[in-house]
Amino acid sequence: MFDFIIVGAGLAGVTFAHTLEKHGKSFCLLSDRSQAASLIAGGVYNPVVLKRFTPIWRAEEVSAFAEQFYAEIEAKTQHSFRIPMPVCRKFASIEEQNNWFTAADHPLLSAFLSTTIKYETNPALPTPFGLGQVQHTGRLEVKDYLSVSLREWESQGVYHSRTFDYEALEIHATHIAYQGVTARNIVFCEGCGIEKNPYFCTLPMRPCKGETLTFSAPDLQLDYLFKSDGVLIPLGNDTYIVGATYDPEDLSEAITEQAREELTEKLRKMTSVPFEILSHQAAIRPTVGDRRPLVGAHPLHPHLWVLNGLGTRGVLNAPYCAQMLYQAVFEGKEIPPEMDVARFQKRLGFKKKSSHK
Image 1 (cartoon, rainbow, N blue to C red):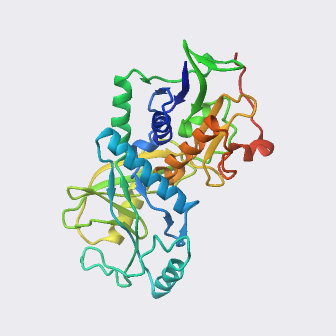
Image 2 (cartoon, rainbow, N blue to C red):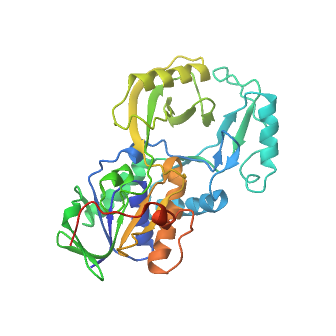
Image 3 (cartoon, one colour):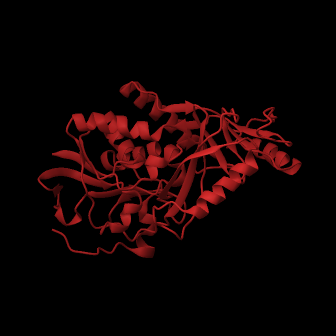
């Protein structure tokens, strides 16, 4: 009998699987890779909201935990997934400079915001008011992180590429069973696929479509993450990502000409060098109304768990949320109330769409 069946192999599912493995727990991981948000993610880890110069939720704790977690996974797999690089925010005025320095005095931000203004000498990136630099930031190669992990588990026979059939799930008093496999618990890490889940579909997900462009610009010569009207993410070999759009209305995964034009215009405003569009990507982000993760157990079925809603900060949130879930299951610790799905129990309830064994 496994300790867990994990449904979904994006950032949430794979990170929870690593957490279980670290603690000597067993799992069976199932996914048809239908949710592409993790696969096209830029993978930026940055604990500061650069629009308002404010810290993300639990910034110091989440950042420190993520740093330790990914270092351990890199050592275990003998692969490097992180590319440390600063995030630099372009100032639009002297007033923004002053706001930056005020924010840097905040105890939750002083470790992250440099008080030295950076002036870009690269003519491809005009910054007349300079740049504010965020420290302890970078990019995770999400595709590599997922593929290396899944290849290893597939070779061990604990990862299976298949679509989950909710009708085949059997819920018993002490365990669950699924197509001949038994486990003490099951956790759903399905991203926006949660809308099809009869046990957790009423949670208040607010999916949002994001589109990005990958482009080549040999004259750009950018070696940090550049934040202005959009974000420029260096990938190496003179290639970059510009993104991303936010569209809560169109929830198809089709790329759109409107987004291509919007991103191309942002790129033209940020830099004057020539560029060539190489590819165009789109995916649906699993965000939540209150912008907090969804972690916890179903109120009627204590062996059914959810780990979802990691949002745009998924690279940072995933390790911390996975650890909170692990401690809740195996150590009896309470999940932080801001992320516990119990916060929606009274307001929405959990209504099953169909009956199961």
